[in-house]
Length: 269
Image 1 (spheres, rainbow, N blue to C red):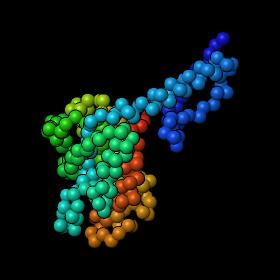
Image 2: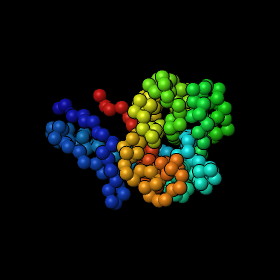
Image 3: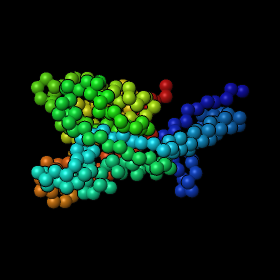
Image 4: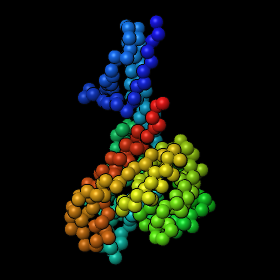
């Protein structure tokens, strides 16, 4: 008798209220008792793999966040901004970095820490970025198990650069430098621009994929009427108010954490 072999998509496995892993599978393609047994065994094996997958990250580790003001902005009286966290969350624990860390800690049952590298200056000099400058930027940073890159909003996109091709080359230099410094084992998430630019977001997505990472799109978040800080509270400086507010920060964190915990994998052939 030929036993049926069926693909089990782990992305559909969810936790029950009792905390055990369960899966609903259609066994109609398995003919006969022995075949059904084989399918059930395959499902149980997949459930076991899924249940131990996140636990493999339950070790002391570090998430590296490399970004601009949305990742962290220090106090700036000229902007009437007194925070030292992601602009423009109302509190430090409500920016996407803190919220992402909380979700990853809960999912991996670990006390994983976070390191933030403010890299707004890289955006101002983006087209002069070289491998040696990337190495200098990353010197002294301890090995991360996960990396989040959030850059591109302040890069000059005027003239010929609007096509994104030059941006893509430089973004690729940055990601290659991260991989050279930290290896390919660290999970990578690349966040798209907050202020949308489809051609640039496309290049971020392509370069991130080439580096083995997962792309996090924000275009649909930005388009929501509740997205910026000014929609939630009075913000004196319009530049600050245009940054993501608490609700948008929470949505960004949800997407980044999902990309880190369940990175996108190629579809089975």
